[in-house]
Image 1 (cartoon, rainbow, N blue to C red):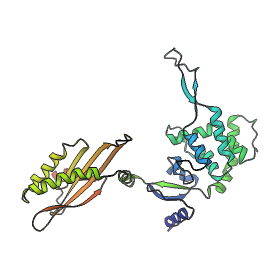
Image 2 (image 1 turned 90 degrees about the vertical axis):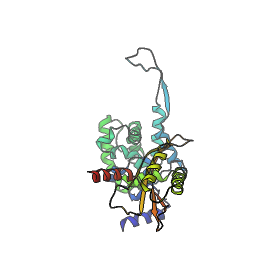
Image 3 (image 1 turned 90 degrees about the horizontal axis):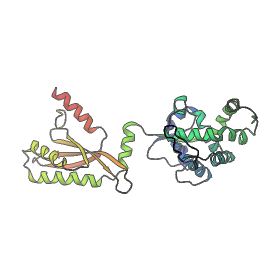
Image 4 (image 1 turned 45 degrees about the vertical axis):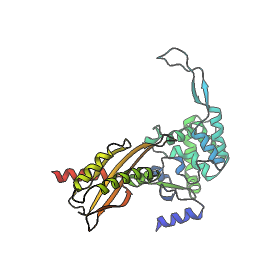
Length: 313
């Protein structure tokens, strides 16, 4: 019931439920275990639509400057490297605080909400949180949300400790209308990632091979048919693996399933494509097989191979 209520709230507030979300949930401090990307917060848009979107995007890819004084002591020749421009980054963090919205408050608090382990990792999200904190997150909170109630004359650690303590009672107030996307996990996430790829070019390869051998082979040459299909599939570089489920004695005698694992690259972006498709063939009363279904299945080949090894032993 709660899940439906949350979805209703998301729709009511104009939030679209992403296809990769298991649910849209209210954000609390405990929710941080589910957050691995700042764009899981439903108030943010990857393509900036408002000032906070733009500022977060700038902080995600911080402005750089050339450090001409850099030396590598293993190489005494002077080198120049790009480093984060602290002045511009401080300005971005201050501008986030100046919005004085609950959403900006969440962004400024993220580093403190990370557990100790994640505070030290080098993921894009943790680095983003650390940069917001390092380049004045606590100063912005003090200035815009605590109305400069913490003295700037305090040293770094006492200042941050006092701002942190004073933030605690504000979190309930500012977090209450914040929602985030709890992302799909495990097989559900794999299925979602596979479904983003158009499978038609891959299916056409398999359908062409299957139809060729279905038309040219007699019904009593089923094993030869299956072997011939696998040999033909091995000729295609995009096919990494293929397996029939015929070793499983519990499968229907009139049904055969073929799992095919494809790996390729998207021609325009170079992004790797990995999908696993299962092709189901059924034998009719006259002994002829036909392709009746095609579906995604992330574990078909691994599970079938494991089952086959058990039956062999």
